[in-house]
Length: 612
Image (tube, rainbow, N blue to C red; front, side):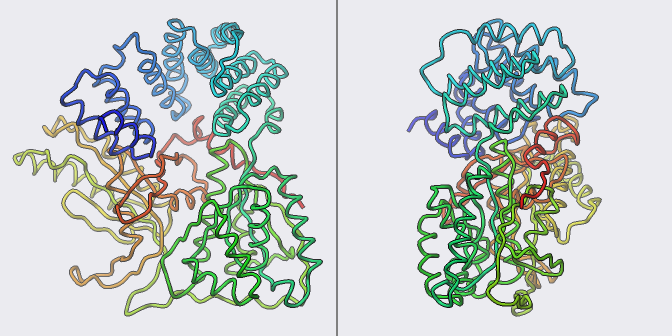
């Protein structure tokens, strides 16, 4: 396999760190290869390392490639991304700069894509006359026959819709967008990109958004509900048939396209079976390995549920086991899994540019003291303000007091706990000459250590070795904020001032999971141990310098906390260890609170009234 093929393969799989490294290695022998320079910067953009991407864009002199549309568009894309993340004071100038870059490409190529981006960035910057003029020119460019390729035809019509929106012609924009969707009906990711862009423009111009609601892709749902015994072991056939009909009707009425939840006897299995019948993607998030889960939550409630559970497992799109505990399903692991399932549905909604919904089979009672299960999940979801749909559940017998699952027991002096973890190191530290090591330790590692000491809340545990640090926190939001603070602190270090290589880059990895905290036999202090710690360290090894990569678990729990000024963008399935399955990774990035990017990220979680 050639260099380019290997790089392209790594890029498509989401292994951006290795793809970037391969580009840099190949450029040593082919410094003028435009494709390699372009792909290296693209890897950085995709991983969220915008500052480093901008530096490499300038270092590789890609702006000088006047006749290469891809390179020109890359520069414009960088400027647009930086503008959208900027605070209100800096945004107009940066948006105008991005508009100028897109306009330059449009004048060279006449393509509708750079034209509509130029028009939108000018309008957002406040330059309405130029935006309207360009919007009309884009409409002229879109009058050419539609391409045969469905995706290309879609984007041409979508550009037309955006141009009409900029001109304030909502009816024409609606028709153009419907025509776009008809060209490539199943390309939900493309639809989502357009919808997010159109909502952004509509909100910025104080235009109505209602015309977009009916065009959203099918929305993701988190499901939960009460456990009950099988109908063939104590009656309840009518109740089960009624629930099946209600679930099917709700999936259709709420335009639900994918489902996330567990697989306990009763309600969960009914939801999973409904997803199978409707051929909808089903992601099962289990607190423990499948055999342990079935012993605790399926087998005790009737053998027929076991057979149905096994059928659901066979047809599930994805099965996530959030711990490797082979002995006990605890309250801690159950709540952890539920939070992840809820967070995954919110992440999917953001990707699709739509709104998540929670569907519950519930008796309608509100029991705020219930530590886990349907009542707890309903309460946690309701606090986010997202839509919630209740399917009434009639108990066959009086409601029994909710039993309490055990917390994991301490084992040989080790206490179980849920921890958010950060691993970070300085990539390229081995290139620091020996005579510069004191300055590297004092001004780089010393700076990072000082930042760690000033974090509020402080890490529950911290350790260092060589050029790396390991930190743990009680909450993913605390860990996420700490990661971005450390990232920003490193970016402010003037490496040239200390004669240190400018290729040094901080990489940070985040993960969240159950650990065992016990006495470290070497350090003689309490420390975290376990498989989840190892996973966090493996993610660091595949993180692009200048970026923060986090696991899907970390991203999902962060999505449930709805932190302003933070966003997670999907990187891809990445091999973090030869002995572990490929893992979905996300790039965590700080954006200015209230920036257009921050507002756009919140659009998928906008509040709705509960549906009864």
